[in-house]
Image 1 (cartoon, rainbow, N blue to C red):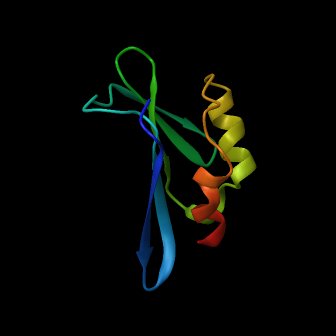
Image 2: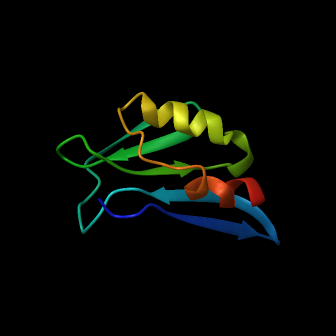
Image 3: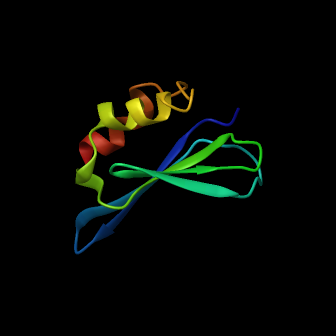
Length: 87
């Protein structure tokens, strides 16, 4: 599994949105599921590829981990999500 990476988008110097890449390789998004303040992207086999936060302040780190755990994705450490806290 590829190490997760987090991309944060800023608008007018303030954090606006974020995308957490958790899937590896060149797999394509086959479906997305909105779960509260996050949108989770899946490949054709149902594996989590990434998580989109449209409004970065809408979800806490705990909520994000809870939503991912609902899809049996528990491979994130607190360090992987530290940039969200900083933003």
